[in-house]
Length: 334
Ligand code: AHG
Ligand code: MN
Ligand code: MN
Image (cartoon, rainbow, N blue to C red):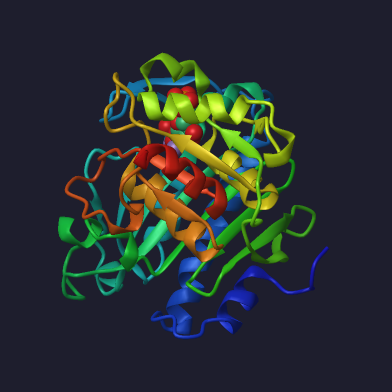
């Protein structure tokens, strides 16, 4: 157990130059915490009760099969955030278009949220860690009106808060409001997230590489060269590196943040833009990475500098410890 201080208390105490009023921040956090607890409780019942595991029978706008928990988590976050007077709109992996909340209370809210309600869907049925990813922006449209597309298509550099929940061996919220990255572990016996990991930083040196190597034939030759390099025997440079790939971005990122490592989902000849979504997967993780002393790039530009043009656009992602991302960049630039 870390210090006996809760998520809400710690973030509000460390608000610094954060633009959100304390009351707004508290409202946002209470929506995220509540939805996280509800989803967590449901995930813990997977396998015990009907209607949790398995496919919903629909595909989302990206043509991917929706799992029942994808749909459930989306509804819970949408409702929890829409019930508080701070968020005027939500964009989600599981919604074709953005949601502009209709109530005048919400329309007075000054922020929008972008969310991957359930990350790692393919791991739901097999009892492997999954997550939720989110980021928050100040709206561009005037307060008191419905949210518009422009509110959501902002560069990652404009993020005011981002985080993820990892539903793992314990459940944690890891988040940043621009004052470093902090982790809060859920105590299920009393239903509270306590500060457990203050000021998380990527270790300077890492030796874990995380990639779906089944895509190897479709990678660019430079990525192939890097992956061969990861596996070479060279004790002086600590190689071979250790391969670890869970298939839940949240869990792979979380492990690499704690132990030091690099995660890559590069473009492939089959998926030239990669697989991950810029707005609610890559941007929040890139923001957290930079706040934790790491780096996040597509290959030739920083993720946070990309001007989005579409809600569900994809982009390649290379993210993790600075030394390892820089090393991979050396291969890309050669
Ligand atoms: P989601 O479940 O939200 O669709 O995200 C899945 C993502 C990400 O979490 C993971 O790292 C990646 O897809 C895994 O993709 P592959 O199965 O192609 O390796
Ligand atoms: Mn995802
Ligand atoms: Mn998802």
